Length: 313
Image (cartoon, rainbow, N blue to C red; front, side, top):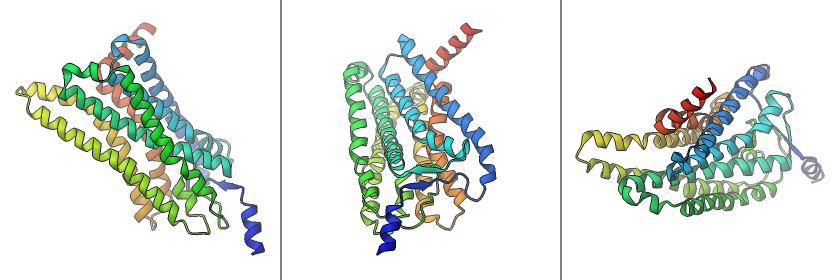
């Protein structure tokens, strides 16, 4: 009993992992990560700046896009401190409370992003099903309320997570398998039953991310039904094209999420490098690719960005 108390009392930090089994590769990874974080800030910052400056972009679709860009930046900034400490400064240790705080923000902004994608699906649904009332339905007040609701939902569902982790005794290894703190990663190090943690995590996934995915799917069923009712083939293509950027954003978020979930559940025999790679893709890919997708596929944003660069030249 004395040994247990000493172990638990001295457990004040976690050790984060860069590239498992390949610490000599960390300096190379540092430059790659630095490049990705720079792309994230530049891309999402450009989206926010262009949307704010260009009056023609003060429409519901672009307000939601700005919220998505803010969420992507926030999610990236949640992982940045520990990424820098490991890959740039070779300092993998993180305090227990700091780890729990990072865990809250990573999972919280993940739920926010899912909610924003649902909001954007609703935006596309209204724009296609009822275009004449589009602006009158999605007023700035309504968009603000949607944004507050999405944020409040994320805070409410993720708020218990730090307390569920903090109640657990940790007397095994304190080495995490990722360069940042995740609930499922920290939970496996506990030396007590984690059934409540597992159950709550499953409930969050089903009733937030899973439910959001079903809503998005149902929205696109209704959108497709409306589009197929349009007589002109050219008009059908044009209408569907307005959804393409959002569909790409949904795939960029949910495909890596499903991948990392499957790896955690069924890939215990896989190399730790695979687990780390999938987790990094899940958190880093959407913030990097979303602004690129919207810049390429959205004519108004692309035109405005080109105008800005032409003026500088």
